[in-house]
Structures are given as C-alpha cells and as structure tokens.
Image (cartoon, rainbow, N blue to C red):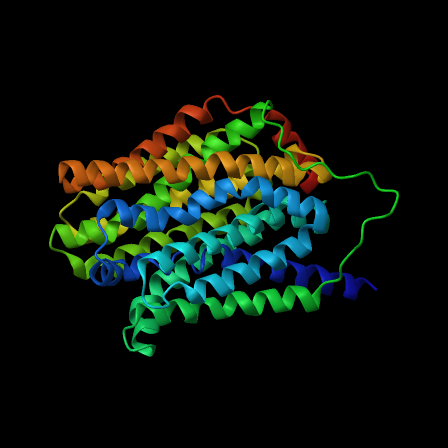
Length: 399
C-alpha cells in the first residue's frame, strides 16, 4: 500500500514537471529563430516585441476565463485542454509562412498556456496539499527546463533537422506538448465533484492586497526575463556579435536552473519571505549592466545571472497562492495574480521596443528589463508575507 502511494506521488510529480516544461517549451522556441522570422516577414522591432510578448499578454487576459474553466471542469481537465491548444496552435504558427497566421496561432497558443497556468497551482493544492512548496518547485523547475531546451537546442539541433526551416521547428516543439496531454489524460483519474458540493467561485478578489502584490512582483520579474529573450538576439546583431546569440540565450535560460534547484532544496526556508525577492532583484540589475559589456565572457555570464534572478522571483511567487489561499480558492488568487502580472510583463517590453525604434540606441534594449527589476524592488518592500512564511513551515514541517 505504501509503495503504491509512493508510486502515485512520483508519477504525479513527473506529470507536473512535464506540464511545467510545456508552459514555455513552444514559446521560447521563438527567440532563436527571430532573425529568420524578421528576415522572411519583414517585422520591425515593435512587431518583434509584440510577437514575443503576445503569449505573455494572453497569460494575463485569459487567466480569469481560465479560472472559470477550472471551476467548471476541474484543474485536471483544464490542464489537458490547455495542453491540446498549445500543441495544435504551436504546430500551425509557421503555416504559410504568413505573418497574420503566425500572430493568430501565437494568440491561440498563448491562450492555452494561460489556461494551464492557474490550473497547475490548483493541481498542486489538490495533489500535494501537505507539500505545496515542493510541488510548486518541481513544476517550476520543469518550466525552466522547457525554456532552456527550446532556447538552447533550436539552433544547433532542431533547425539542422528540419533543413533550416523555422516553421517546421515549431512543429517539432509541439510534439512533446501533445505527448504530455496524452499522459495526463490516460494516467490520472478524473475526480467528479460531489453533488452536494457548493458551486466553486472563480472571480478573483481584486480588493485583496495579495492579488496585486503578487501580480506586480510576478510581472516585474517576468518582464526582466522576457524582454531579454526578445531583445538579446537583435541587440547582438546590432552591435556586430551575432555569433553570441546562441551562447547568451542558452546562458540566460540555463542560468535559471541553479535557482530552481536551490529552491527545491531550501523551499521551506525561502518561501514566504521578502528578502529573497530583494536580493535576487539586485542581482538582476547587475546582470543587465553586464550585458552592456564589450567582453563576450562577461556578457554570457551576465545573461546567466539575469536568468538566475528572474527564475528565483518567478518560483517564489508561484509558490505563494497554495500557501495564502484555501484549496478551493487557489485558482482565483492564481488567476488574479497572473492577469495582473502578465499584463505588466507584456506592456514593459513593448514600451521598451518602441523606445528602441524611436531612439535607435541599442543599449535601450535593456531598459525594459531594468524597469521590471525596479518594479520588483519597489513592490517587494511592501509584500505582506508573514502568513505565508508561517503556513510554509506548517505545511513542510519544522526547519
């Protein structure tokens, strides 16, 4: 009996990890091929920012409807639906190729991810009520692995396999997402709601400070990460160092992994405290400054530092809704947090791209990242996380 329980626990952790990978796998397949898309479809920098930021905007716009879907279908079925949307839309992005279809399918793909994002914290609360910080760290680690895989393998591995075709590369990255949907559908049971169970609420509590505080911190940290993914390739081309694109993108995304492993090991010590947000935000500022260096080694190391800081902020924020909200309301807090956070994440890089277009100054590529870090710092000083720290200790045991 005990061995079966351990198997179920391990299986569910693996599924959470795979679903985490699929949250970013298809999205981060875009930056490595942006110069090719730029060339073939004649996009300007605002369009580039919109293309990379559109899924992020959808994370915000569809988070609340996703909460409604979770309330009606349950977190498991909502996750499966989101995975299927991501897989199909991702594969169709390069059809043509056509700029309107690329943006339309990117919209649908972003909607699929937006449904999954509040569903995964709800699954954590349902499957791992006693260890939410650990389970969150597991799927967040998967998210970071997904970013690293597509960012680092698209140029050296996937593009040669598909003859240099960026549309076909999108099809390749859609296959693992479809496989995860099948595994979740066939490998986990649907638990119907009891007939006597009260109707689940879905609308976020916009008056609660946690909704806004967590949303703004999430938005600032994600703006740091997504703006660097969007602008590093064109920045390096503009300064005459295109050979560093793959190395810097790989460092940016691989740099996130040490942060996720540290949180996996020290989840109960780090979750629910203000200081880690402040320290890692300052590290992010240092990384942005290093990206302006003329030294390739410093630039690559700085990209890794930016990734590390962004990952720390992301995971610590994602871990809070299962600690701060009752199980039946985790999806509501998550949806509100995501709606605010990813709207901020979309707006900051878009404005950054517009400033770059208007000024023509290449260094302005990283203004958006700096604005994101300042947002994290200003909000972190006001975070009300005392209850989260206490709940984290209660859920995970004494230190």
